[in-house]
Image 1 (cartoon, rainbow, N blue to C red):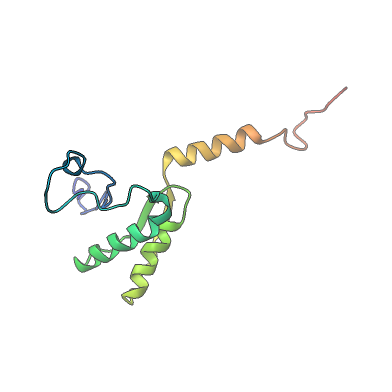
Image 2: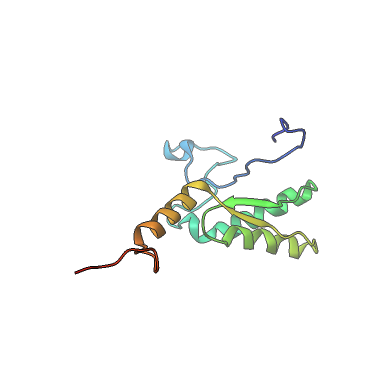
Length: 124
């Protein structure tokens, strides 16, 4: 929770992990931190992860208004579906994270040709 701005803001929530040090060392234990299968890419289940997190937060009467994520809409969709299942009217706003935004913008600039009417002419 971030309270420096005078508003209690949840900055991050994560609940998946593919690895557990104790499992990798072959030790018997409970409450394993490896709660995701190694052979399944996390990107295939971002919506499931978001849905689980949203339902957990809703139990605490906390609702997500803004998700900063990659270009995929899976997390937004999963969160919206969780709220719809509860009958809540919340809709999540999606904001693209900076690394993905930067990469997408750079790709567009590199792939763009000269603009029409920009004064550039081929005099060949």
